[in-house]
Length: 194
Image 1 (cartoon, helix red, strand yellow):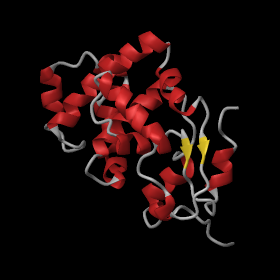
Image 2 (spheres, rainbow, N blue to C red; image 1 turned 90 degrees about the vertical axis):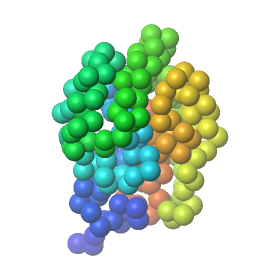
Image 3 (cartoon, rainbow, N blue to C red; image 1 turned 90 degrees about the horizontal axis):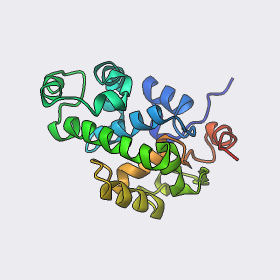
Image 4 (tube, rainbow, N blue to C red; image 1 turned 180 degrees about the vertical axis):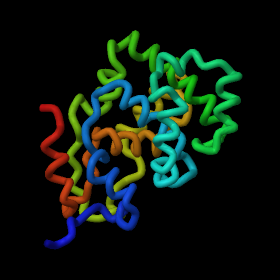
C-alpha cells in the first residue's frame, strides 16, 4: 500500500504527522479548544511548532486544561511558579500574557456570547477553502488575519500579530491550507459548517 501523501511541512516526525493527520485544519467551534490554540500559537512565536507540540501536554496539565476562567484569576505568584517549570516555554511575557488573554477572552464572550461567534466572523462563519499546490504557495498572512490581529490587539490580547493569527486560522480550520495533493485536503474540506 503506498504511503499517504501529506503536506510537506509535517513529514519526518511522528508528532507532527499525527497533529497534521488528526487536527490541523479541522474546524474548531469549542471555546476551550479555541483558547488552547490561541495560547499555543502565541507561545510558538519565534520557535518551531514542533517545540510547542512536544510541550502541549505539559501546558494542559500546568494551565488547568486551558480553563480560561481559572487562568483569568491566576495570581502573579502562580505565574512566577509556572516560569520555573521546564515543561513549558518559560518566556515571562508569554506566560503572563496567558492570563491577560484569558481575561480578554472572557470579555469577548460577554460581548458575543461565545468566542467562537466572535472569531469565526473574520471568515464569514465558514472555512476558506484554499487550493495551494505547494508549501511555498501558502501565505504567512492574509487580509483576514490582518483584520483579526488588529481587532484582537485593540481588545488587549497579547501575541496576536498577523502571522500568529494566520497560523491560528490554519490550526483551527478557519482556512483549509492542506495542499491539494495532501490526503487530508478533501477530508478537511467536507468538515466545514454549511
